[in-house]
Structure formats: structure tokens, C-alpha cells
Image (cartoon, rainbow, N blue to C red; front, side):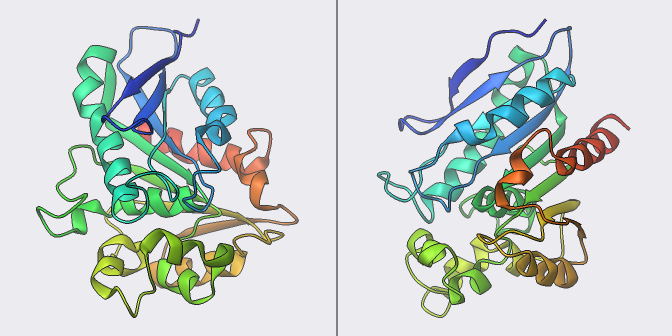
Length: 254
């Protein structure tokens, strides 16, 4: 039996909320955080992650499917988008006792632009103390990028997503070196927590070559799926999700 999903605010803006769904049983429940993609633009929302979140709950995890301010929202883009995601993850520390969550056993899964945010969450300990997103209260054991935008600077220069990175950051890496230094996972290496990348080699939105280049530089595991496209990575029936779930189980339950 699954408890009814709860919409919980972590801030005062309309977009600063998440949907927490708990599995049956007393807990404490390990948590999988879901960060949806959409090139940081507000035309997409957390419904993208709902199928995999539901599957995670069926496997005994609490799912925290978060929304955040995006480009087109008041306060969205850099730094508001990143600050929201950090606050949403840290909110687990606020509600963990009340909701019987195992906040020391957390995985973060992000798709596309959400993959950028997932990797950034895992690197927060490398940020300068006192800065936006620094001093995390919740540190994940694993971060997963599903066809992630893992290197913001490279994606900005290639105008990936019709200039999506430029829109989110407010300019390019040459114009905003300090902002990119704290927002780009590729500039926050080495990895602070384990990272896993799953990517389809038929992806024409975020090309798999971008993940190959990042994985080689970061020395992280990349698993490619032949013929798979960008949205196969968020299909709970796709083999990539089984790979992600096995890794989550190993690190959260092992």
C-alpha cells in the first residue's frame, strides 16, 4: 500500500515545491530525488519524472519529485534555478523525521538539464562555503545523469538546445567566468560523490558525444544504449532504468 502523494513547499514561490510519495511500511525510507529536464525552461514540468518516480516507490523508495523556477519564471535561471534545487534537496533534512526518511541514503536522478542539476547537487561540497548552494545539509550517495547536460561551457559554445545554456546562465562562459565556475559540474571536478551516466546513442537533443567527452574527463561510468533516444532514458520500461535502479539499490541498500 502506498501513502497518498504529498505536495510540500520548500519555499514561497509557486514553483518551489515537490511531490513526496512514500511506500508502504514503517521506514525509514531511502529517498530518490527526481529532477526533470526541459533545458531549464518553464514549458516543461515535473510530470516528466512521474512514471519513474512511481516505479521507484513501487520498489520501496520514497520519491521526492521536485519543481523549481526555470527560465520564464520570476527568479528563474542562474542563480535562482540552482538555489531552488539545493533548497529542495536540503528540505529533506527538514521533513525527514516527520516523514520517516533515511536522509543519509539519498540518490538524485536527473534527466537532460535535470542531469546537469543532479551532477551539480553532487558537487555542492566543492562550492565555496557561504555561496549559493554551498554547505549542503543532505549529501547524496549517488547522482545519476540521464542524457545529461554535464558540461555547461561546452554546451553553451555549441548553442545546444538553441542557446538554452546561454538563456539559463545569462551569457556565455567567457562573459561570466565566475558564474560558470560555480554552476558547471565540469568545472567542479573531481567528483565528490559517485556519478553514473546513461545515454542513448540515438539522442539528437543532447548528443551522446557530450557524455563521452565528460565521462572521459571526469573518469565516471557511462553506459550507452544503442538506438535509444533522449526520452527513452525516462521510460521506466527501458533497459536504462533497470541499470539505474540496480546502482541505486547497491548504494542505498547495500
